[in-house]
Length: 100
Image 1: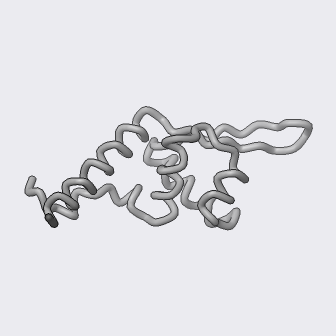
Image 2 (image 1 turned 180 degrees about the vertical axis):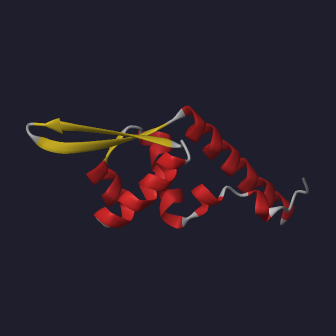
């Protein structure tokens, strides 16, 4: 793989909102849905759609439960998700290094 290979970036993570979710969860997992929504400045529906894509990839796990009869959703970064995040950052670093 050449140092400049933008095609190696993980498309699941690379979307702006999913990138924000992964960045936040890498330091704050698990995160409640509403906290995550505020951190990435998303609407309920938009965040839900992006969380579903990350969950389908196995990068996050959504935990849904009821607390005081109110639904609560927490997003957890999985081991696979942490590995993908670290690889994504390494690929970005390689692209930055190639620009020097």
